[in-house]
Image (cartoon, rainbow over all chains, first blue to last red; front, side):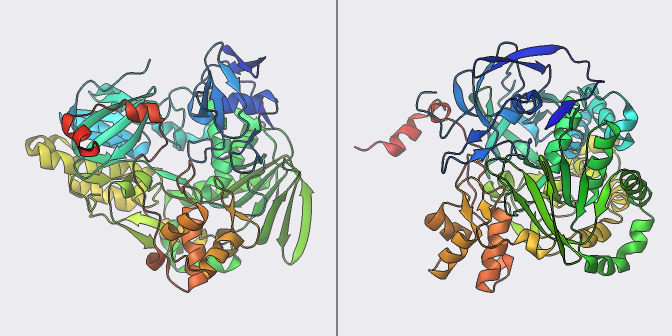
Length: 98
Length: 472
């Protein structure tokens, strides 16, 4: 859906999405890294289970909700990637305790 | 790297580090006021100057000169003494100017003598059939990725809607080597005539030449369909096609990405939760705060600057930020106001920056069918409530947005009405034969962004707080 411009010279950062290594760049948000990666990053909604991807990328819509380092319901568009970060695509509502 | 505020009280707390917030904080600090700038993003710039201090797009021409103005604002801010905290989400502001802010999963509480809200704008909801499908995003979302991560669309891409941002985004995508298959322009034909009386001011504004050359640049490379009167996205769990009607003819095209945009509206949540009075703006079709000429709101000590004060664009936002900050300086440290630009000079800057705005507002006033949906089209994305659900609720007695919550939970999901509120107001107004002003808006309350129960429970409590909720 999206590709990186060749002029992007930022250093690489490796994150893990459902355990699979994904190449991101320093300064990417989690949502941008997911959309750039080509992995199926569709979450499913808490209400009907409908698939969603980020809509606004500016902290408004909450369609980027994702589990980051074991914490659910994080807004992926507001969290910068960090080396070794564990991202899980959130299916349905947040689980109790994570 | 999460840093709590250094003090418990400040002369001025500015919320939002976009054009208005950057200018306001720099101005207040320049006059010697203890100033704190809180911002939700990882770096300064807000949306219009998104990633201004970190963008990987180094060819200045690609983002355009208007973007790089933001770098000067950041430089002025950093030259001063403002304390700046990013990734800081303000979740409460009240009439006492007490502020609760979540930083790195913990909340801090601070008190301000003056608060300048610079929470900016968000994109107007664009509730068409299929707008919740993966692959449908806002134009602003694509622009955010372009500025902050140099990402551009590379699948079959359709941009639909209207307004200056749409053309700017299209030009930027093309300059960075991205793909756009078609642009669907939803500007109503009648708007051109309605805007005509305001054309002179626009022709003499800087927007005119820039806008025209950008449209030419885009039209040379992309097929543009104007006069689009219907629009729908379709697909099974993922966007597959976009269909539209233009000139009475329906067409369907395959698409991987649909970028929607029909203007921006003030982000009112924090201001409304603090009790700031808002009125329905019949031209801009949104809620705008009631402000005096210095941006002072109906709540003593709270001023609003930038697009949150009514859409005026980045140049006007900068000036409004300076005006609000100068007003704070005049109130708190009148002797220091002399070193700042005079109010008269600032007001004249503002008039210049706002020139042509009425023309743009009139020309790009979105059509009713793209604001007020029908049938199975989802209105509330969080709770997945359709237009028909809302109308059914009206038929059995729901009178306004707040009653509707009890019927359908609209506006009660995590986005707290940001993506359905305007639609709900207009939809209910139309169904009940009332004005949007009469129908009203959701009553917004803290926390204006979700925080965890653990974070709330960790809030320091006084003995009186505990006694107030414990029996016996």
